[in-house]
Image 1 (spheres, one colour):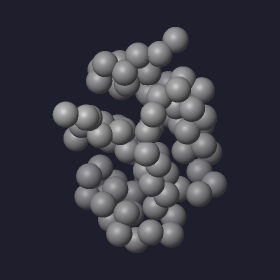
Image 2 (image 1 turned 120 degrees about the vertical axis):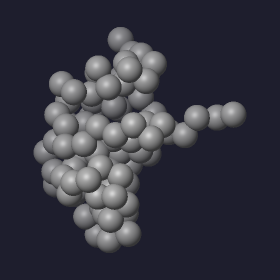
Image 3 (image 1 turned 60 degrees about the horizontal axis):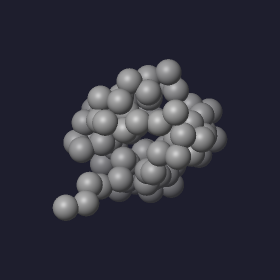
Image 4 (image 1 turned 60 degrees about the vertical axis):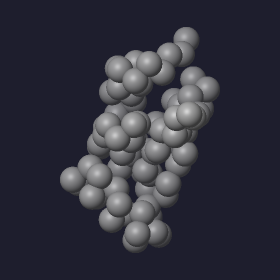
Length: 85
């Protein structure tokens, strides 16, 4: 069974979202981005999952990292056995 890609909820122009995407791309971590800026359904899903309205929000196997900075990514990814150099 194939695991689902990490799901990254982002907002247009959000500097933390841009930094998170740059980090994931730089480390070759596959993910699926969902821009909630103009998608009310996706925005409500993010709020439902995370309990808050801030982005970025990362979801891996049902585990949520909400309103985070890049420094929070490495330990969260490692806790899900996502390794990189």
